Length: 245
Image (cartoon, rainbow, N blue to C red; front, side, top):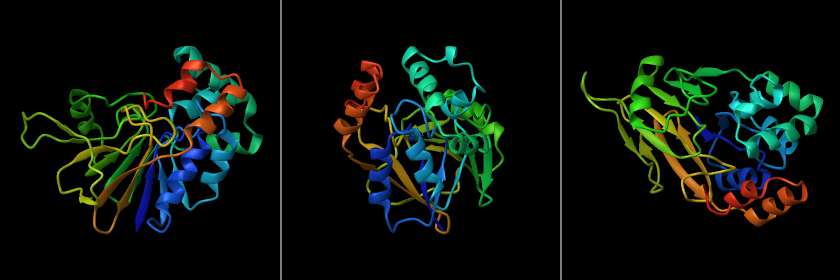
């Protein structure tokens, strides 16, 4: 089975559609690593599109924020503004969908799914090898799939007891083997990349061959920015989509 591996859609319908168009015929099921909503102008549309697919999804911090499970005062002002707007904009049915999302999952024997980290699934950022290294002790499967940072990366567990965790940015040169080494893999963000590349980021995970293909795809950023401006979203939040930060 081939899985479309996505994370951090963030209410960006145009980016989500671009990913689905690019991945058409390449996958059998969608695995979403959380944060369907937040930041973007189309929360209901993104939830409905995801729900229409054969998929599984876990909760992210922005998903929890719109439910009131996290204090939005802990967010930066831009994120807080849109979280409160999203809370008021969500339909009752889409709110129930988000409420149904689990915090973490184990799938296909080898894969732990968590939005932030296996240690703290909702909130912890795995940005550095030192944080990744500690987290290898908090999941028992061979592989862990995370989102949250909006930056694609693969962290490899140390080969030796006192070894150091290694980090690598995934290549877009086609499918590559995951290998037998334990790893933590982040496919990047669909709706708001933060690695300096504004294109939507995602991957195709083949569960039969244990291979991963990392992909980037452009989408009409200006159209999304126009929708955000019309809704009075913060200027900084609108502009950052152009730069991938």
